[in-house]
Length: 278
View: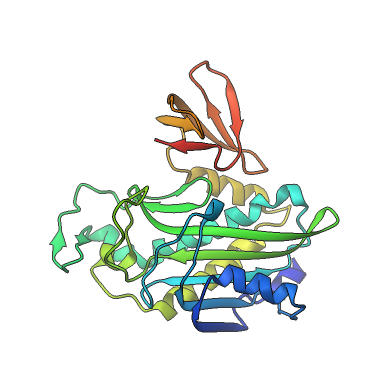
Protein backbone atom coordinates (compact mmCIF):
# COMPACT_ATOMS: atom_id res chain seq x y z
CA UNK A 1 0.00 0.00 0.00
CA UNK A 2 2.87 2.42 0.78
CA UNK A 3 4.18 2.30 -2.78
CA UNK A 4 0.74 3.17 -4.10
CA UNK A 5 0.45 6.10 -1.73
CA UNK A 6 3.57 7.55 -3.35
CA UNK A 7 2.04 7.48 -6.84
CA UNK A 8 0.49 10.84 -7.62
CA UNK A 9 -1.53 10.63 -10.80
CA UNK A 10 -1.57 13.95 -12.57
CA UNK A 11 1.24 15.52 -10.52
CA UNK A 12 2.97 15.97 -13.88
CA UNK A 13 0.68 16.69 -16.80
CA UNK A 14 0.79 18.17 -20.28
CA UNK A 15 -1.92 19.47 -22.58
CA UNK A 16 -1.30 19.50 -26.32
CA UNK A 17 -3.13 21.70 -28.80
CA UNK A 18 -3.49 18.87 -31.30
CA UNK A 19 -2.23 15.31 -31.63
CA UNK A 20 -3.24 12.26 -33.60
CA UNK A 21 -3.92 10.28 -30.42
CA UNK A 22 -2.72 10.78 -26.85
CA UNK A 23 -2.26 7.02 -26.50
CA UNK A 24 -0.19 6.90 -29.68
CA UNK A 25 1.88 9.89 -28.55
CA UNK A 26 2.64 8.38 -25.14
CA UNK A 27 3.63 5.04 -26.67
CA UNK A 28 5.87 6.90 -29.15
CA UNK A 29 7.60 8.65 -26.26
CA UNK A 30 8.11 5.38 -24.42
CA UNK A 31 9.54 3.72 -27.51
CA UNK A 32 11.92 6.65 -28.00
CA UNK A 33 13.28 6.12 -24.49
CA UNK A 34 11.65 9.13 -22.83
CA UNK A 35 11.64 8.95 -19.04
CA UNK A 36 8.02 9.48 -18.08
CA UNK A 37 7.06 9.77 -14.41
CA UNK A 38 4.44 7.29 -13.27
CA UNK A 39 1.07 8.99 -13.16
CA UNK A 40 1.91 11.33 -16.05
CA UNK A 41 -1.23 12.65 -17.76
CA UNK A 42 -1.24 13.77 -21.39
CA UNK A 43 -4.42 15.46 -22.63
CA UNK A 44 -5.26 17.19 -25.89
CA UNK A 45 -7.43 20.10 -27.01
CA UNK A 46 -8.04 18.05 -30.15
CA UNK A 47 -7.35 14.45 -31.12
CA UNK A 48 -7.34 14.05 -34.89
CA UNK A 49 -7.16 10.25 -34.94
CA UNK A 50 -8.58 9.14 -31.61
CA UNK A 51 -9.61 5.51 -31.49
CA UNK A 52 -11.36 3.00 -29.30
CA UNK A 53 -11.26 -0.75 -28.81
CA UNK A 54 -10.30 -2.60 -31.99
CA UNK A 55 -9.26 0.60 -33.74
CA UNK A 56 -12.76 2.04 -34.05
CA UNK A 57 -12.62 5.85 -34.49
CA UNK A 58 -13.49 8.19 -31.63
CA UNK A 59 -15.42 11.20 -32.90
CA UNK A 60 -14.65 14.41 -31.03
CA UNK A 61 -14.94 18.12 -31.77
CA UNK A 62 -11.91 20.24 -30.97
CA UNK A 63 -11.96 21.79 -27.52
CA UNK A 64 -15.28 20.32 -26.42
CA UNK A 65 -14.33 17.06 -24.68
CA UNK A 66 -11.72 15.57 -22.37
CA UNK A 67 -9.43 13.30 -24.32
CA UNK A 68 -6.27 12.07 -22.66
CA UNK A 69 -4.05 9.25 -21.52
CA UNK A 70 -2.48 8.24 -18.23
CA UNK A 71 0.87 6.47 -17.90
CA UNK A 72 1.27 3.85 -15.16
CA UNK A 73 3.78 1.18 -14.20
CA UNK A 74 1.54 -1.60 -12.83
CA UNK A 75 4.28 -4.11 -12.00
CA UNK A 76 2.05 -5.53 -9.24
CA UNK A 77 -0.14 -7.06 -11.96
CA UNK A 78 0.67 -10.18 -13.92
CA UNK A 79 -0.32 -10.19 -17.57
CA UNK A 80 -3.42 -12.30 -16.91
CA UNK A 81 -4.70 -9.73 -14.40
CA UNK A 82 -4.40 -6.75 -16.71
CA UNK A 83 -8.19 -6.51 -16.88
CA UNK A 84 -8.09 -4.82 -13.50
CA UNK A 85 -6.82 -1.72 -15.27
CA UNK A 86 -9.97 -1.72 -17.40
CA UNK A 87 -12.01 -1.93 -14.21
CA UNK A 88 -10.03 0.94 -12.67
CA UNK A 89 -10.53 3.17 -15.72
CA UNK A 90 -14.21 2.32 -16.11
CA UNK A 91 -15.07 2.89 -12.46
CA UNK A 92 -13.10 6.13 -12.32
CA UNK A 93 -14.96 7.43 -15.38
CA UNK A 94 -18.29 6.39 -13.84
CA UNK A 95 -17.39 8.29 -10.65
CA UNK A 96 -16.67 11.43 -12.68
CA UNK A 97 -20.05 11.18 -14.37
CA UNK A 98 -21.75 10.63 -11.01
CA UNK A 99 -20.17 13.77 -9.56
CA UNK A 100 -20.82 16.01 -12.55
CA UNK A 101 -24.33 14.75 -13.29
CA UNK A 102 -25.77 15.15 -9.80
CA UNK A 103 -27.96 18.01 -10.97
CA UNK A 104 -29.12 15.91 -13.91
CA UNK A 105 -30.21 13.14 -11.58
CA UNK A 106 -32.41 15.65 -9.74
CA UNK A 107 -33.73 17.49 -12.83
CA UNK A 108 -33.44 15.12 -15.81
CA UNK A 109 -33.43 16.73 -19.22
CA UNK A 110 -31.63 16.50 -22.51
CA UNK A 111 -30.44 19.54 -24.45
CA UNK A 112 -30.72 19.35 -28.21
CA UNK A 113 -28.00 20.71 -30.53
CA UNK A 114 -30.13 23.83 -30.95
CA UNK A 115 -29.83 24.47 -27.23
CA UNK A 116 -33.53 23.95 -26.54
CA UNK A 117 -34.50 21.55 -23.80
CA UNK A 118 -35.92 18.22 -24.87
CA UNK A 119 -38.05 16.05 -22.59
CA UNK A 120 -35.87 13.44 -20.94
CA UNK A 121 -38.17 12.70 -18.02
CA UNK A 122 -38.61 9.04 -18.96
CA UNK A 123 -34.89 8.44 -18.42
CA UNK A 124 -33.35 7.30 -15.16
CA UNK A 125 -29.87 8.80 -15.31
CA UNK A 126 -28.49 5.29 -14.93
CA UNK A 127 -24.77 5.03 -15.61
CA UNK A 128 -23.48 1.66 -16.75
CA UNK A 129 -20.38 0.00 -18.15
CA UNK A 130 -20.91 -1.59 -21.52
CA UNK A 131 -18.33 -4.33 -21.84
CA UNK A 132 -15.59 -4.07 -22.74
CA UNK A 133 -14.82 -0.35 -22.86
CA UNK A 134 -17.79 2.04 -23.05
CA UNK A 135 -19.57 4.11 -20.41
CA UNK A 136 -23.27 4.72 -21.00
CA UNK A 137 -25.88 7.03 -19.52
CA UNK A 138 -29.35 5.67 -20.25
CA UNK A 139 -28.10 3.60 -23.20
CA UNK A 140 -26.25 6.58 -24.71
CA UNK A 141 -22.46 6.46 -24.98
CA UNK A 142 -20.72 9.17 -23.00
CA UNK A 143 -17.17 7.79 -22.75
CA UNK A 144 -14.81 5.21 -24.16
CA UNK A 145 -11.59 3.63 -22.91
CA UNK A 146 -8.54 2.19 -24.66
CA UNK A 147 -5.70 0.54 -22.74
CA UNK A 148 -2.31 -0.44 -24.14
CA UNK A 149 0.28 -2.34 -22.13
CA UNK A 150 3.84 -3.62 -22.30
CA UNK A 151 5.28 -6.69 -20.55
CA UNK A 152 8.44 -7.48 -18.69
CA UNK A 153 8.44 -11.22 -18.31
CA UNK A 154 4.99 -12.20 -17.07
CA UNK A 155 4.21 -8.84 -15.46
CA UNK A 156 2.97 -5.52 -16.76
CA UNK A 157 5.87 -3.10 -17.17
CA UNK A 158 3.78 -0.15 -18.34
CA UNK A 159 0.25 0.80 -19.22
CA UNK A 160 -1.24 3.70 -21.13
CA UNK A 161 -4.89 4.26 -20.24
CA UNK A 162 -6.72 6.37 -22.80
CA UNK A 163 -10.08 7.91 -21.91
CA UNK A 164 -12.38 9.96 -24.08
CA UNK A 165 -15.24 11.64 -22.20
CA UNK A 166 -17.89 13.69 -23.98
CA UNK A 167 -18.09 16.94 -22.05
CA UNK A 168 -19.45 19.90 -24.03
CA UNK A 169 -20.08 18.45 -27.48
CA UNK A 170 -23.70 18.80 -28.62
CA UNK A 171 -23.54 17.48 -32.18
CA UNK A 172 -22.45 13.96 -33.06
CA UNK A 173 -22.02 12.32 -36.48
CA UNK A 174 -25.04 10.44 -37.85
CA UNK A 175 -24.86 6.70 -38.21
CA UNK A 176 -22.99 5.95 -34.98
CA UNK A 177 -23.36 2.38 -33.73
CA UNK A 178 -24.86 3.79 -30.53
CA UNK A 179 -26.41 7.21 -29.83
CA UNK A 180 -24.02 9.51 -27.97
CA UNK A 181 -24.50 12.09 -25.26
CA UNK A 182 -22.35 14.50 -23.29
CA UNK A 183 -22.26 16.03 -19.84
CA UNK A 184 -23.46 19.35 -21.28
CA UNK A 185 -26.38 17.70 -23.06
CA UNK A 186 -27.49 16.09 -19.81
CA UNK A 187 -26.99 19.04 -17.48
CA UNK A 188 -27.85 21.88 -19.82
CA UNK A 189 -24.64 23.59 -18.71
CA UNK A 190 -21.17 24.14 -20.10
CA UNK A 191 -18.74 22.10 -18.03
CA UNK A 192 -15.22 23.27 -17.12
CA UNK A 193 -12.86 20.75 -18.74
CA UNK A 194 -10.18 21.48 -16.14
CA UNK A 195 -12.69 20.44 -13.49
CA UNK A 196 -13.32 17.24 -15.41
CA UNK A 197 -9.62 16.43 -15.46
CA UNK A 198 -9.20 17.18 -11.76
CA UNK A 199 -12.18 14.99 -10.84
CA UNK A 200 -10.99 12.20 -13.11
CA UNK A 201 -7.47 12.23 -11.65
CA UNK A 202 -8.85 11.97 -8.11
CA UNK A 203 -11.08 9.07 -9.11
CA UNK A 204 -8.25 7.25 -10.89
CA UNK A 205 -6.03 7.68 -7.83
CA UNK A 206 -8.67 6.04 -5.64
CA UNK A 207 -9.54 3.20 -8.00
CA UNK A 208 -5.95 2.37 -8.96
CA UNK A 209 -5.11 1.61 -5.31
CA UNK A 210 -7.90 -0.98 -5.40
CA UNK A 211 -6.16 -2.93 -8.17
CA UNK A 212 -3.92 -4.49 -5.51
CA UNK A 213 -4.65 -8.10 -4.60
CA UNK A 214 -6.06 -7.36 -1.14
CA UNK A 215 -8.54 -4.80 -2.51
CA UNK A 216 -9.29 -6.25 -5.93
CA UNK A 217 -12.36 -8.19 -4.82
CA UNK A 218 -14.19 -4.96 -3.91
CA UNK A 219 -13.02 -3.38 -7.18
CA UNK A 220 -14.44 -6.32 -9.10
CA UNK A 221 -17.74 -6.32 -7.22
CA UNK A 222 -18.30 -2.65 -8.00
CA UNK A 223 -17.45 -3.23 -11.66
CA UNK A 224 -19.78 -6.22 -11.99
CA UNK A 225 -22.64 -4.32 -10.36
CA UNK A 226 -22.46 -1.66 -13.08
CA UNK A 227 -22.29 -3.94 -16.11
CA UNK A 228 -24.76 -3.02 -18.82
CA UNK A 229 -27.63 -5.54 -19.13
CA UNK A 230 -26.22 -7.78 -16.41
CA UNK A 231 -28.81 -10.37 -15.37
CA UNK A 232 -31.16 -9.38 -18.20
CA UNK A 233 -32.40 -11.26 -21.24
CA UNK A 234 -30.87 -9.55 -24.25
CA UNK A 235 -30.10 -10.26 -27.89
CA UNK A 236 -26.53 -10.89 -29.03
CA UNK A 237 -24.69 -11.79 -32.19
CA UNK A 238 -21.29 -13.39 -32.57
CA UNK A 239 -18.94 -11.46 -34.84
CA UNK A 240 -19.13 -12.68 -38.41
CA UNK A 241 -22.45 -14.42 -37.83
CA UNK A 242 -25.79 -13.22 -39.17
CA UNK A 243 -27.89 -15.19 -36.71
CA UNK A 244 -28.69 -13.68 -33.33
CA UNK A 245 -29.44 -15.40 -30.04
CA UNK A 246 -30.89 -14.48 -26.67
CA UNK A 247 -28.73 -14.80 -23.58
CA UNK A 248 -28.25 -13.53 -20.05
CA UNK A 249 -25.07 -11.68 -19.13
CA UNK A 250 -23.68 -13.00 -15.86
CA UNK A 251 -20.52 -10.90 -15.63
CA UNK A 252 -16.88 -11.16 -16.60
CA UNK A 253 -14.09 -13.46 -15.50
CA UNK A 254 -10.75 -12.32 -14.05
CA UNK A 255 -9.27 -11.97 -17.54
CA UNK A 256 -12.09 -9.76 -18.77
CA UNK A 257 -13.98 -12.28 -20.87
CA UNK A 258 -17.75 -12.01 -20.98
CA UNK A 259 -19.73 -14.72 -19.19
CA UNK A 260 -23.02 -15.36 -20.92
CA UNK A 261 -25.81 -17.90 -20.44
CA UNK A 262 -26.80 -18.94 -23.94
CA UNK A 263 -30.12 -20.32 -25.19
CA UNK A 264 -28.93 -23.85 -24.43
CA UNK A 265 -28.52 -22.93 -20.77
CA UNK A 266 -24.74 -23.31 -20.87
CA UNK A 267 -22.42 -20.64 -19.51
CA UNK A 268 -20.02 -19.54 -22.25
CA UNK A 269 -17.09 -17.13 -22.34
CA UNK A 270 -16.45 -14.55 -25.05
CA UNK A 271 -13.35 -12.49 -25.74
CA UNK A 272 -13.70 -8.74 -26.35
CA UNK A 273 -15.10 -7.93 -29.78
CA UNK A 274 -16.09 -11.54 -30.44
CA UNK A 275 -19.71 -10.75 -29.62
CA UNK A 276 -21.93 -7.69 -29.93
CA UNK A 277 -25.10 -6.47 -28.27
CA UNK A 278 -27.96 -6.16 -30.75
